[in-house]
Structure formats: structure tokens, C-alpha cells
Amino acid sequence: MHYLKKGGKIMLKFNVEKISIPLKQHVGAPCAAIVEVGEHVKRGQLIATPTGLGANIHASLSGTVEEVKEGEIVLKLDKEQSDDYVKLPDTDDKLQRIKDAGLVGLGGAGFPVGIKLSTKIEGGCIIANSAECEPVLSHNIKFIEENPDIIIRGLQYMIEITGAARAYIAIKTKYTKAMLAIGKACKDIPNISVKILPDMYPAGDERVIVREILGKVLDIGQLPATVGATISNVETIKRVAEAIELGKPLIDKDITVGGRVKNPQVFFDVPINLPFSEFINRTGGYVEPHGEIVKGGPFTGKHATEESVIEKTTGGILVAMPHIHGKPKVGILICECGAGEERLKEIAKAMGSEVVSVQRCKRMKPDKNGRLRCELPGICPGQAEKVLNIKKDGGQGIITGTCQD
Ligand code: SF4
Image 1 (tube, rainbow, N blue to C red):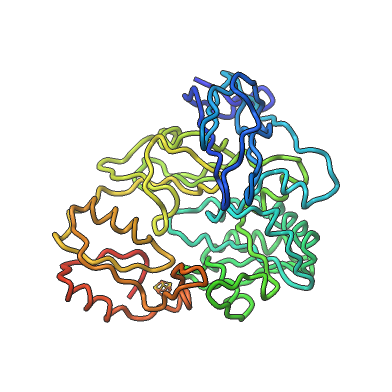
Image 2 (cartoon, rainbow, N blue to C red):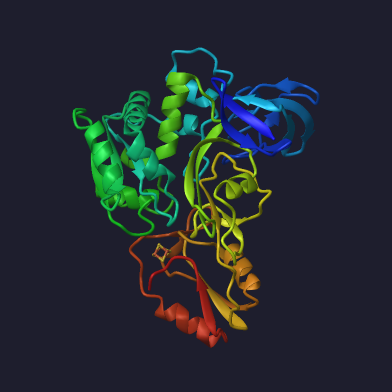
């Protein structure tokens, strides 16, 4: 058993001898390791740096480097761990702090925050994406309920860095407690206010947020910065404040563990790179019967295993019901905001079904790189035509991601 101590008090016990630290936990190219086999590293120590678009990677726990392989660093953990960490280099430059911290978008996108905030949006706005859109996931809303002030401070730093004039917290009214907490925290700050998002999926999509909060429609491929907005997920904003105020690198993560587990719950500040099994056990284990483990939310999550590790962009560890036995022949209907073709085919296979038809929502159009994107996310058309196509192709059932038609 290993122990993570804070001020002599045990914060976390875990039964893990080694951790594997992926060198790509962000959009862009893998980082390059800057440590060698046999070297002892402390929690918070910089161990890999970008080779192109990317973000620094720090050791989330202390230990000895056992292997440096292509794509990962394997660390044999010290038996006793401290919650302390190696602080980021001293600087008054807040943007540099964020870059040094290896911050990436923690809502799942993984885009380096230091690069995102390098774009000046003079007179524009920062929007805190508090949609917590995927069902089951709840760590962002719970964090706002309990610690709204740090989100407000994070937004103020982001206003200062980008030259924005104001910030909005975009949230759904169903999160009453969080909405009241953050509303109270910003009530005396003239340039920060709460804005309401509709309770629908995908309200957390950047283009939906821009449309709902600013009343501007972005074309496919257009970034929020083109209308003077920068959007960041709640936990990202929390980590911005931590990097600037505490000199803390991105080594811990907030996660929701839910679904078929005995005591679904939210965990704050757990070290990145620990395996999923540790947190499933911590909820009391599985409710039987259970099916696959999913990394992320129910709509866009990916298949995972007990050995999968928490990465910078991991928000959810969900345990599903066992797959039902599907119809022999099915069609899949793809929506940008749900599972992609590969994932839907994977689910069909697990259900014992053959995919005889692949259809896409008619709003999906190619962007300049040929990637299919939704023209009007959240303003969803009927799918009767696609259903008929599936039927014509011999499909006896449909597997789809999110469409409510
Ligand atoms: S319009 Fe189509 S692709 Fe876009 S969110 Fe709705 S169902 Fe998905």
C-alpha cells in the first residue's frame, strides 16, 4: 500500500507500485522525456516538454524512473508520498505560469491553455463553460457549489491576460445551488456575471455557448476568438488560478466516478496517472451485473479498462450496464456531438449486431480539413430520412449517439 500524506495526515491510500505517464495528454505532438532511467523525480517535477504543439508534463507522484519508452515514462512509486509538489519557476508573467504548468483544456479537448490565452481579445469576453453537459458527470458543478471564489479569481486572471473586458459564467438553471453560489461570489464584481444556458445537449459545445450567450452564430471551423470570446471549462479555470497563486503544475484532476458502482461520487484533486481500478474500488466496487468501463461521459466517452489511467483530460470513469443483445442487422446514425463512427461500430459489435448502414445527421458538413462538423449544434432536425435509409439497407434497429428525434 502507498500513502499520499498532507501535513503528516494520510490523504490517499493506493495499491499501485508503478504508474505509466503518457507523453501525449493534449492536442498536438507527444512531449519528449527530459528524465533518464534510474533518476528519482519528485511530485510536480517537470519530466517532459513539448516537441511542437503541446504542454509540459510533470510527475504527479514521486518515484524512480524505471523506463522511458516511446510514448510513456514508467515510474516506480515511492512508498510514502507527500501532497507537496515542486513549485513552478518564479515569474510575474501570468501567461508564462500557465504555460509552465502544462495546462490544457480539461473539458476533454486538451488544447494547451497557454496558447489559447496568448490570443488577445481586447474588449471581448471570457466564458466559463459550466454546462456540465454529459449526463452523470458532476465534478464541475460540485466544485462551483463548494469553491466559487477560485473560479472568479481564475476568470479575473484570464481577463487580465487576454485583455478581455468581462467574463460570463454560462450555467443551466437546474444547477440552482451552483448558480446561486457563483452568483453570490461575483455580485460585487462589475465585469463578471452569470448567464443562463438552455438545459439541452450539447449546450456545452463552444458554438452553442457563443450562440446562446452572445447571440452570434459561428460557422463550421470558426473559433470563438473570431467574435472576441475565449471559452474555458470550469476545472481549467480552477487550475489557472492554482498555477498563478500556488505555482502548482497540472498534476491533479477532478473526476466523477458513476454508473454501476456502489457509491457514485466525485473526487477532487486526485493525482493524474493512477489507474481507474483504484477509484472504482473507492466507490465500493461494482453493482452487478455491470458492463464496460467508459472513460469520459456517456455520449462521447471511450471504452476503457480497469488498467486505464487518469490523464489530464479525463473527467469521468463510468461503469455501464451490460450491453443488451442487439438485432442481427443494425444501422448507425452519427451526430457530431455524440459517439463517432468507430465507437458506434464498437458498440454494435459488443451487442452482436452487424452494421449494414452508416448514416450521418444531415447537418454534418465538412470543414476545411474535411472533418465532418455540425452546422447548427443543438438545433437538431428530424431524422426520418436517415431512418428510412437504414431500413432500406436492411437495418432492423438503430444505434445512435445523442439525437433526441
Ligand atoms: S444537428 Fe445533428 S449533428 Fe448537430 S447536434 Fe443535432 S443531431 Fe447532432
